[in-house]
Length: 234
Image (cartoon, rainbow, N blue to C red):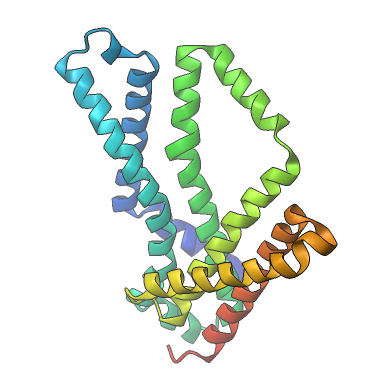
């Protein structure tokens, strides 16, 4: 089986995951409607029961969205272990290393799409509806952010994501992978503290040390994930 076909299979599987798609649609609608209600400050002008209920629902939706943005890639990372798809793919001749990068790429893609749909799109709708100038200022502010800051945020997210993928691989997608993830995250944070103490203020400065620490974490977790996957009995 060609690698591109495996990637298309991952895309097809995630696009047709009705449960997650319905959850994303529900969160997106509630975030948008609740954001419009709050931006118009309806409850400050003698709000009715409906407006108050929407504002309360929006609060729960923001909390649920935060959880979903973490659970979604976690679920995508472990689903192939749970439904035995990975063992079937490996038996069909797909390289484990190739499959690792395909899985990481597809999961990253849909994780980014979930952030756009659940956070960025509702925010832009609220800003443009309330005042188009605010939406334009939001874009202007986004482009004015220091590229180094954006790079650190992105690398921090990628290092957390690679740690999650490695935790799922180590325990073959079982429920305890969340605890393995927290353990790896704690261990990497302790190593980062030692890294900063030894080199951060002496050679590179804090920002550069943080940048290097994230790169090292991504490389280390990726290597561990590949080595474990290659030796696993699927």
